[in-house]
Image 1: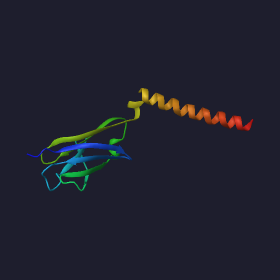
Image 2: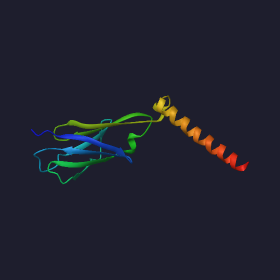
Image 3: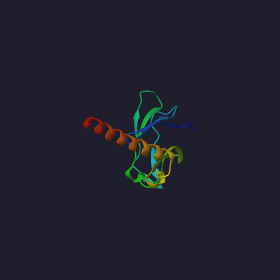
Image 4: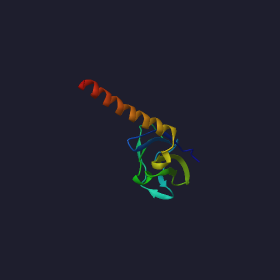
Length: 123
């Protein structure tokens, strides 16, 4: 049985990207994506030019964005095993987090700096 691995490269511009390695396979394994037990459009696989490797792209589905935490799973369809996953955390779940508080403070500080600079220019 061939060992299949899917390694995350990045999550950027609402697209999850990874590298699928399936040594000794000439064709890409079939992948599927799931959100809360519901199927999503299949990830897109493109050959990398290296035998047994494919670039994987999966757009973040709009249904994954909402209050709370949503987890997207990427599975090997033939084996039913989870190869990778990512979570999307948004909305009220972030309201009391330290990172959110820092971001809000930065936004308010930027607003105050602009107002101060505008006031200074006006005299």
